[in-house]
Length: 329
Picture (cartoon, rainbow, N blue to C red):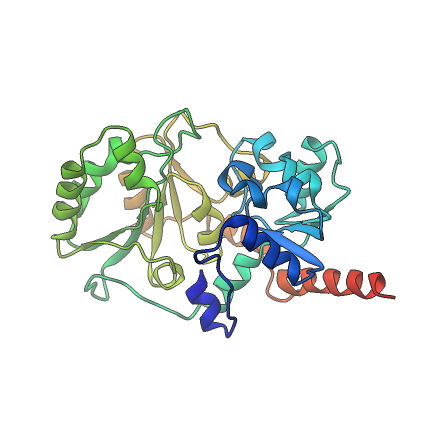
């Protein structure tokens, strides 16, 4: 965001009241060597910033998220992907997915690692928890996705499970549950006909409990670090939370598009629950110390991010500098 850039000492230039064409001319005026986009999807952008108008420099792509859903054409073969000079992808598995799905194979793809993991690692000592949990209490993040129907991904279990989570918190004062919804969840509920009053009523019922809270801050790393486990239906938090080494219960909707090869790798470290009864059963086992996937999580985390090796940002910058030096010879 603009605020986080400002905190880092970077003064971002924003469109403000300029027309998009004028803002594009301003960008061109800087004569950039490289232009980065975090999302490949053209329909999210003004026409002026779509691929056809970006031929004045080398295009680069660092994915906004760790791509795990089984929508390979969408995630690995968009016009922006094909126009990129370099795609700096998350893992070797993702590079293979580009090779499989793109007509360019992986000729413009480098498995540099996921810079967001680097940021989470840097913030690993930060802690915040919004309820007054005591030493013996269990701190749980409940993170429901926004994909309510099979028209788009179909991962979310919020509709069928939200009252069950409320009951779980009511009946177990030693479980401190923080609802951290995907930012699009509540807007999507409204779009699908759920009245605002029903959403507000649930949030009020949930957050008035002393052991429950709603957390919607963009910086979730302090919440991760303070928690004991994650319960989520997907999909972005799976890879990010695995870096903590703590357990994850995956609430499987049974109707999702499923996972690609990278997502299937993550599944090896998750406890899969196909019903809320399975959620509570697994939760009880974890609270008793029964955590057979601990070793698997540690192994997967090393594949995702190894702090003893060069960080993703360092690898990306090295490639950019090397190319720029050669270009300017």
